[in-house]
Image 1 (cartoon, rainbow, N blue to C red):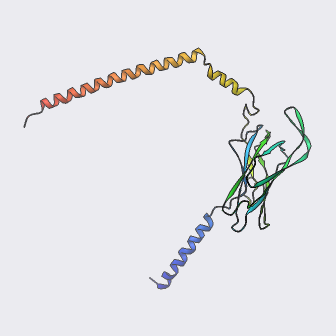
Image 2 (cartoon, rainbow, N blue to C red):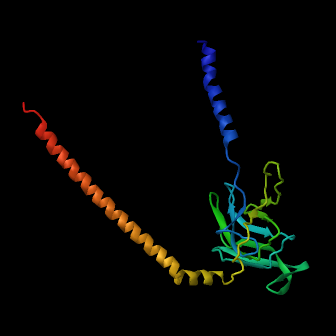
Length: 248
């Protein structure tokens, strides 16, 4: 083999390995939003904004989340997060909302979290929970826009909206997927009715259950008797076989 080709082999292998790592490396993590459980249309939900730290030499010290103006949310309540202070900004609505028979003239337009201490350090992430509602019924998703600020004053804007049929943008905006509306999303009395039905079953259901239990018991007894008979027959067959075996 040509010595020159042999000397080039490690270089080629290394280059190929680097190319594989380059094209197979996962995309950088970004700010996302997910419900705890589900976010049903027309109902209320607890949602978490998940914020990773993508820098090695700085901490995340601030997060600003702007709420959609085309589907405003009247009720937004943050859950306290240790080491962070939170501010909820409300704005006047161009068109009032109607909720529980009352007109709502303003809604939350932005929520801002600011670190009291070190913030989100390199290699860590933080969740910021919110209770929100009433979720709209005329859309399948809510698009939020988030701004992440680092301790070195760097600002990353997660505001690019995903376009259908196109690749994910470099800095995608957090998107909350909404599930189908449920009958009980307004907190009606359906749960009480179900509880009442379960605690007082009708006589037909009780009779059916009793009949099923009797049938299962009878089947078990028959199978037990058949098993015993098969066992006795097997023993008898073995004894007869030994008696018929010629002596040596």
